Figure 1: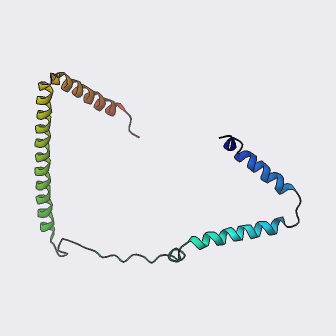
Figure 2: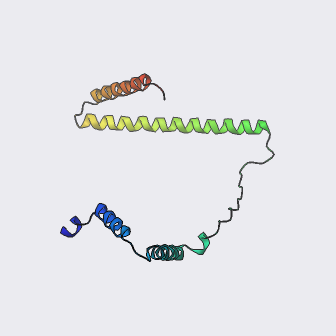
Figure 3: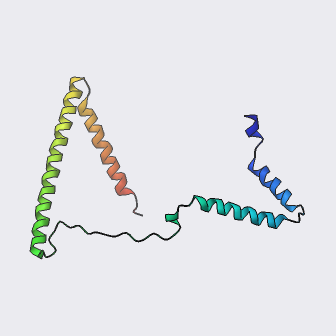
Length: 138
C-alpha cells in the first residue's frame, strides 16, 4: 500500500513540466515521433470495416395490413382493437381484485389488521395525489 501512496497525478504533471522546460535539442522531434507511433499503434487496432463510412442499411418493410384499406375498414379495425384492449383491461382488473382478496384472506388468517392497512394505504395514496396536484407544473 505504501507504493501507491507515493504516486500522485499532480506530482507527475509537475515532473513532466519540469522536464519539458529543460532545453533539449531533439524535444520536438521526439514528441512528433511519439505521437505518430501512438497514432499508428491505435490505428492497427481499428478494424478495416470501421475505417470507412458504413453503408446505409437496406430496409424491408413488413406490413400486416392491406395497403388499399378504406377509411371505414381502418375505423372498424381500430374499434375492434379497442374492444380487445378494454376486455384485457377488465380481465386484468378482475385478476388484481382476486389477488387482493387472497392477500386479505391471508392477512386475516395470520391475525393482521387488513382493514387498518387498507385505510392507511388509501390515506397515503390520497396524500400523494394531493401533493402531485399542489406541485406547480414545469
